[in-house]
Image (cartoon, rainbow, N blue to C red):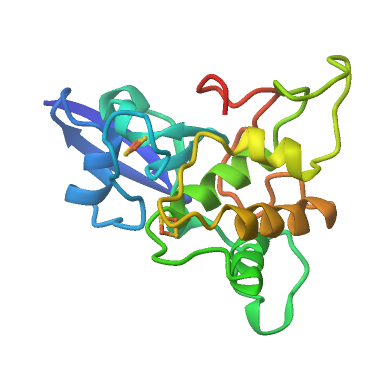
Length: 195
Ligand code: FES
Ligand code: FES
């Protein structure tokens, strides 16, 4: 067993972990944070996406023991902090409110991963694979959002409304990581290959 401390949703959590345990299993099986979903368990679906030091990552591919000292944010840690109140949804992160407003889900299984991935994506800078000008920091038009969120699958096919919801938040200027409990914000790129 290894002794580690993870800053989890704003609170330092000391843990004794088996070095073989994934971050996903640690969150779900030991810490009861079942908002983070297990889909493929192989880095293919994005259902397990969390933020590690502000960068989105697949928790199924991250070893818990490697997160000693890291700042991990799960969907339970997304907050409205830093964002203006939004009526009845004022306790929610703007992405959460936008997903509700746009009805951007059906079964909801992919939604926590979509939300964390989008929160990380909004803090990223630089071109993507569909950006024509590689020196640009492009606006998050739908084509850019679809490309940057392509690592998050939705079995229900709610993509149209997911892209619209993220576009609403991107268009509001909320591109920074406000409302994400992390000490370090992401730079360019997702940190997990092509998003
Ligand atoms: S469960 Fe991690 S990417 Fe599918
Ligand atoms: S809403 Fe069902 S998988 Fe996306």
